[in-house]
Amino acid sequence: MNGTNDMSGVIENVLAGEDISQEDALQIYKKCDFHLIGQTANYLRKHTSGDIVTFVVDRNINYTNVCTSKCKFCAFYREEDSDEAYVLNTEELIFKVQEAVDLGATQILLQGGLHPRLPFEFYEDMLVTLKQRFPGVQLHALSPPEIAYIAKMNHCSIREVISRLHDAGLDSIPGGGAEILDDRVRSSISPDKVGWKTWRQVMITAHELDIPTTATMVFGHIETLSERIRHIIRIRDIQRKTGGFTAFIPWTFQEKNTALEGMFKLACGVDYLRTIAISRIILNNYIPNIQASWVTQGSKVAQLALCFGANDLGGTMIEENVVRAAGTVFHKISNKEIVHIVHKLGRQAARRDTLYKILQKYQ
Ligand code: SF4
Image (cartoon, rainbow, N blue to C red; front, top):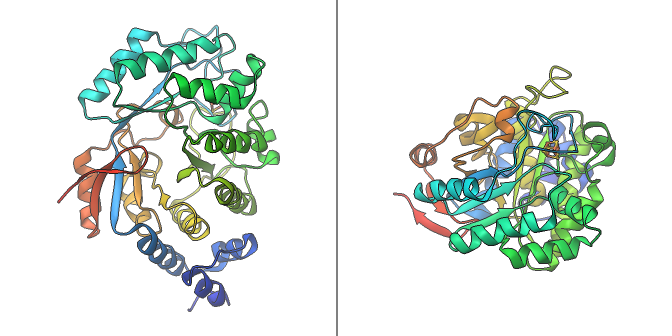
């Protein structure tokens, strides 16, 4: 237990299956030896999720880049009158989905900016059209800020919006827009976006309607370590209540072309791996899937994350625009590369669907 600085009792309790408190999680993150925090998370991963490493073949389609929120960490949005502003029409959407399906995609992640002039029917028509045309494709669509914005613009409740979108074809909801679930952080980096309690309300309502969602975290910007840990604790609190999260997906802030570029030191590889590990340690009794982010870390660090508590590599993302706009250099990963990095670890790679059902195991 060298290097634990008297945290060995906490580690032993965690390994015995006990929940960790917020304060102990913070101390473990700060004081625990780098290898020991990784080994602890890896043990929990193996115990809960086994040795299969999953991924999904998917495409992220952003139906519009027009957004009134203007988050400081975002390089993707455009003003409505910008020459680069767009809203995809039905033909463009169908073309993109068909292209993805031809490449084996089973999931389409549909997200966009908070467009001030799109009527409710735009979202319903988009989902109805895609569901009718591609009934076998899972529509993982519209994050909590978009749902809350549709509710606000149409003077209806979050429950009504989710119900109508679900009737139109929405299968599950991505956990985007969580950033850090803390209003001090949010009021600084995204003051016009929903507060953390509204994000929670959307998720709880979706889960009450039996619609599964993921949970995310964008870290390594202005948040304190304590706020980062509390974010994960808040995700655990929601999950204790509803059980509706399928996965936790943390990734690091990418700064290029954003209003925050050059303002602070970005999270390094060690920060990333410690954060993956503490996510597993906090959430292990509640959320079985912790996702490694090849798109922000590259395949080599993502591979290491699989030894620090992660068990999933997310989507192959035939298309991704939002993180790319902020300068990530990792744009592509093939099924072959995923299988290679997983098998090099002595684990088994498997393609899954949105709800983590195994579709194909690779030998
Ligand atoms: S992160 Fe989302 S809500 Fe914020 S400005 Fe970008 S597109 Fe808009």
